[in-house]
View (cartoon, rainbow, N blue to C red):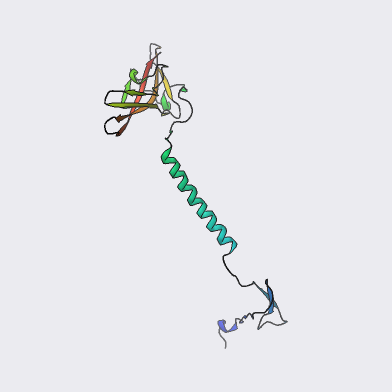
Length: 183
């Protein structure tokens, strides 16, 4: 009795001389002279391999270029404008008492610009510079307002500053700040 492997027919292809393309040759062991298509021999690189290499190489080049450009262009983490106030307490949390502006390391009106919002300038402090900027820390808003029990409104504008030492050029920070402005 023949095993299962002995029952599988052997299929052989015979190469044909001729042009480029596919050639039909009889399959051995099949009744009726069935034919099978055989692709032409492959030479050189295939189109899919070339396209795959092109896409991967282009992607690697794009990532390298974005990294190179990103290192040379200053970062702007804040999007939108620096004047949009959240209508109530920041992130839906209202801190009771007399602390309307919270969550920052330094909170004072000294971090407010002449327009009443968070500073966005550079100040020479003698041996170093302070570089002020705002950031939308209140759910994407530049700031929020808080009203106490006496109906006095306080506006809070989140931001930060860095220090730049004149002698060494070393940048320190960021130090988180909040412009606390009574209206």
